[in-house]
Image 1 (tube, rainbow, N blue to C red):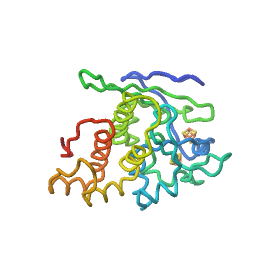
Image 2: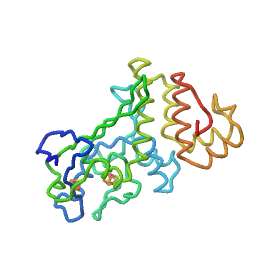
Image 3: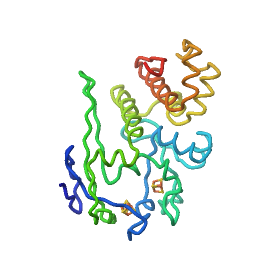
Length: 253
Ligand code: SF4
Ligand code: SF4
């Protein structure tokens, strides 16, 4: 069994276990939601805006701030907290997380850190996990054992990880295209597809999205009826429009 020390990022092999339990009786309960710099992925935004019953545009306006990633040069979205000196998550309450069923992937992943990569030649994906200890977190004072796979299942992380991997491939295409931020028009295209999914859907319905004209009625109805397929298409579409990646319009393609 792997026992994390106070400061290290400890690698976790496939059969290794770690101990952890987070619960309302922990003296540190909610503390990790009060010192936040929370990046949101496209799938995080999809889940949160639906939880709150908001359009993607309204969610972005009310709860997020936009930046340009200093390393990627891509538009990134973070949860807006309450003032410069106060990094409290807008969704935390004395009873805990108010969006728990649809909380972001990074909230689910902690205390693990996941690194995934894909072999360019074989396409084979590998993932590695590490245990991250933070001094304020008392969740490690527990007897409850987990493997990484147990944790992923228990926290409902599978779809978050799948979409993160697709999004990371998009970031990889930008890295291969060169350093520096995107031009203004490309930033708008990226934001539309990755973050403003309801607007992307409207544009698809109106038939005003470049390169989607050849989509048949049957495929179009399938994509419009399922937001996860829509998000798949949106990320593939932006990879095609900005970085010339192949675009397969059938969601099963
Ligand atoms: S979304 Fe929920 S779990 Fe995540 S930081 Fe906010 S309150 Fe905490
Ligand atoms: S600091 Fe750790 S144990 Fe405490 S609430 Fe956060 S994750 Fe749970």
